[in-house]
Length: 475
Image 1 (cartoon, rainbow, N blue to C red):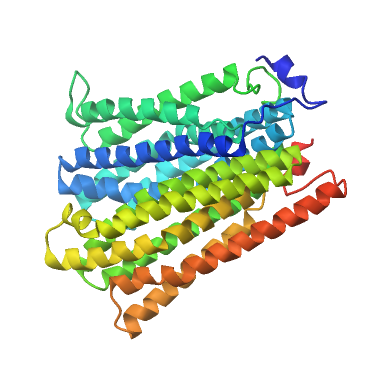
Image 2: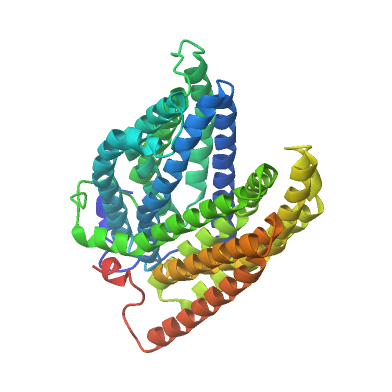
């Protein structure tokens, strides 16, 4: 679809196909789950390859990856903001507007990434030094982080492009692109680490170059797809590429609270690791294993949450509150079902899972207790994930920030008190989630229900706009 065709829909609205709500939820959710699983497996494979070099190599790369987790969470501001804006424009049938917002998001991602790349490259050494690691570890970490930060523009464009496509209801394209990039990455990374097939042997930093080149391929494919057009929206043409402050403001107004939420949540879990570390090496090892299990069990929740964000956003644009509420309800039910099922499996198989990683009696004992507690909390996390996603689709990222941050840090405070004053163990640390996660789930569920009620009243009263993003969408 060319630019002139896209622009023809700005004045009016386009008739958009409306499959059943259940089908739309699944069509969005399962590719996101698959994409997240691929990313997790890629990280595991990369870690294994680097680990073949030396302990210093895995430690240096590990320190860099910790820094990157925080940076990626911050960059998520652009991804979430652009996804919601594009979803609301697309839901309103304003395909030209959705194209304009997609162009602006990509333009701003490049503009903002350039100074970040320069600053990150220059500060890579001092940042790694904050970890207090040995000289050889610091050198590897610095080199890895410099490569990653110098090429961060590719990562940002990839995140923005994927977010915009999900806003249109297309999560399959980002998944397919990620699958191809991950496949290429395995061979590139192996070749660049060990010098195979004529490639230079770069050691641990070869992992960073392999990841960059595979991401570059993925970003190029994603931009080509968006240029050709998806679901009637194309970024082709020369118009709307000059940066507009109003769009950047709207993207950041939505995205910054979401990014801050991720940063504070990550910091909370980092604090949790520090609390568990005081219990000894066995407890810390058990905690690491339990956290890996938790990461996998979260994938369905994340997938359905992203589906809820996109579909509620589209419903806001279409002024169909019942449709948005229905999509959120379906996503919540299926997230609960999937995560509860994974909880049952992990509860029953806790000991065999732990023994895959360690045979030490203390690690097995603590690990089983941690995994079983994690399993019991799964349904509550499913609810809070999806309800948070639904609120973000409305443009309300402030409430999930406050609710989830308060929940995670309340958990950490209670866990610290349990360990230091009640002689609690790792099961008590994780067990606090059985108190806080139901509260968080109920609070977020009630807030979304109230928001839907307010939304319905505004639609009935003939109000032209709803949510924080409508000014940008209706321009």
